[in-house]
Image (cartoon, rainbow, N blue to C red; front, top):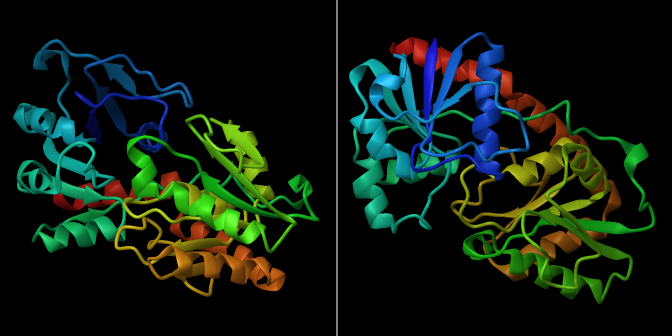
Length: 331
């Protein structure tokens, strides 16, 4: 099968969304399918080599025919729709509710009502589309199960309880509610002196509350980082499929999330099995974090279950095979 990923007006950079596309394309190629990235700018993603062909076409004639073309971001949808029939059936893989690109009313008019097949990466996005009467198919990207895994030998803070979280700033600070992580830690640190806060992210850290910070860590450093975290804090309120909590779970770390409509953790976080789900307020969130701080036995049991949960969702090959099987049904 031949698939075009349309990145025109979107591009590739060093961010989680681009990483998902690159690794999805690489998995498809390893499954012996042809993948082309068409773009309007240079590939600026340096974290993972892209195995697919990446081209910046001047005209449509520069692009080979395909079976499917997939818009990868809101700004690529119009160009995907305008592409010739020989580019294949038109789909949009919606991986976030991008209100930072346009308000919700315009998302409905310019994205949901456009006649593309709709793929989503999570339960909460499927439910969001259903609210507007739009059907979709869940296609998750899968996980790097061999790159992040439990390893007790990496743990360096046996006398500490380490809270972990994602550092963000700018447009994502509010929707990921990074301030909840800081406020929760600051409150609980007064009571539990052996508590530490470790974080990672793409941006510089802007507070002295963080005990250890990893700026754009390599996968090896991420593995070390997650294996030293005892409880992952995930207060996000507007995600598709939130990746860092699932990565923490791959290392056997329980997660505390919320029941926000778009927490981005609904696909894998199960209350009282691999973590805790609080009500959608910071008081409940902090209280659930404290429950795990004081119960080491529960943390360990949830951690074992956490790894099993992500393994059951599958790796990138498993999930891209599901995409191919779906496409085969409708071709």
